[in-house]
Amino acid sequence: MGTAKYDHPGYIADIGPQGTYYVGVWCPHGYPAHVHIGDAAAQADAGLRLRIPDGAFQSLSDDFETLCRRAIGQALESGLLRDGLGGFQETRLALETQPWNGPMQPAPKQAQAPHIALQS
Image (cartoon, rainbow, N blue to C red; front, side):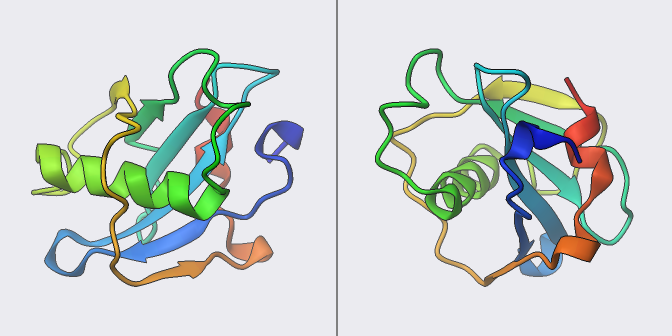
């Protein structure tokens, strides 16, 4: 996993018909930070990476869970998760997005998706 995720295990978000996704904050060797979303069941590469705007990460009042919920909310609102993740996608995290309020559980450390931290 590396130290890039601040030893934070991430979350498992149950999006219902769209699937179950691993979502976690990743900061590769500094900034900019990203929120990665990957298919939790498939343990495949993180198919969606939402970049936190440059310089915003340190000043954000959001905790890791709120950032992850904003990312899921944006992915659902924009249609990126409508039919699941179909290939790698990268976009900017819209900090004004309302956090998704659906079911999300902390991912157990041993169940962390190693593929999330491999994307750079």
